[in-house]
Length: 335
Ligand SMILES: [Zn+2]
Image (cartoon, rainbow, N blue to C red):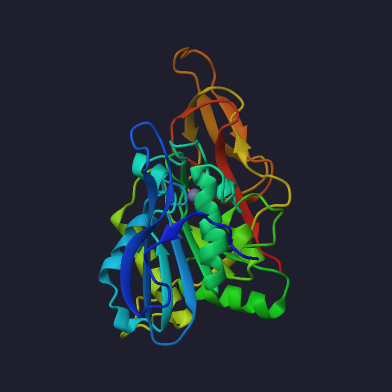
């Protein structure tokens, strides 16, 4: 399919060396009639080898990946690259600049609008450019997420499996190189507007992760992600390591339960978590209590897990409303 994008870049994807700029599209508003939205973009190319598309800031309030990719763009000597890195450190830049999950320009959640629309809202135009201009140039897609402002994740990676033994072997090997203790091996999903849907359509190896959250990046998690990414880029052959890299952890592959196992708030109030992230729970175990401090004599409302599993994420904001996701479970992966 020919791309119909209206966005453009002054970067040359075929030129060796490091280029840092943006891709741009028109956004005509009261304060800037001929203005453009600029999405930061870097191309680092050298030698012969694969192309890896690295992305962070898909959700604007997820910071670990934005920091690690900005560091990579500054620090990486293009002479070390065997192939090409296409780097988007702040994919939904309007959202990221506002420090919010979604875009202040149109309310768009970038990871719900793929494959996007070349003539659509700003968020849809970003999705279209990434999915139809950048992904077809790559063999591997790496999308770095976290829990953002409202969730905290046990740091973990994701890799897509297809039920194709050769592809799945490569997907699981890449996740092992990434070296996080837990990796969600997710199956082909019903299209949900996610970047991974477009990566699947283009046949890319499809990796990512949830590297923390709580609306902040900690030194420990940034270091862990930088080390994991270095191992992954070495494994893919695109940035061979100079010397020994810090070893990764043995990886346990996980899956999402068939039936939604998330715990959702049933009442408004203040959440008191019952468990730390990384706990293994049984059906019926307490996830949290929701208190009503404005009526302190009222008993808190227990919220329990309906299924067994691994507590991979929980809400990172104390105040809750009915419908808020309070906890997410994974289960063991069975090929
Ligand atoms: Zn995200």
